[in-house]
Length: 214
Length: 98
Image (cartoon, rainbow over all chains, first blue to last red; front, top):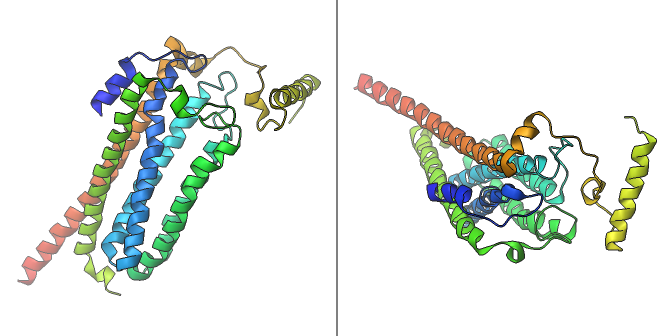
């Protein structure tokens, strides 16, 4: 990750109008979303396992993966907002521009927010695990639609939208050299934070078994 | 909300421009499809952010991520601290019972 950060600042990139150096945000803003998708994938997988096996450990894993997913999603939204504010909206002071991808990503984050609201309303662990797992599978099914299918049908600042070239056509090979390790690095970071959280949550369950007995 | 006639004319122009460029779809957001954007000279934070080819925008983004992750680690740490306290109390209680 350190190499990625250094490389992200120092390596030369092709200069584009409007973007200038902010094209380097590709290394930081975009992996946030990839990490969020990876987290959602983890979460959906463990929700599925939790429904299949009924074991609470999968429920804990699904919850913590979702938590990390929502966290990286919010980081992605904030960084995207800053990027747009000082790049495309100079002199206008627009922080939130209702770009389709931005809006739908925010909806995605809200859908995952509802997952935690739903969890907090149910106190009996076994029922909570089953209902939230079913909801989580639904939530994960909406993400590809919200982030990839719908924004491509609308005008957007993001690549791949109508009239904009897709990622593969515009990205210089040298930038890929940094971009792919950045994605792998952020997903790795997600995995470390995720396993830490799972271990903490497991410990909590072990220390307080009386809450799990009903 | 006050609309001056000049702005209304500009909006109409922008909408026309956007439609002409495509032919099928209408503009989704007239602010960024239009080519003529009423711009003010960069002020305050913008002057700082735009210096040196906008490199500080990247710095801001990296700092947001950095502090976000730091905050998350801090939260995990606090949770662990609570657990440590609970575990310590439990072992203390057990030793008294013994």
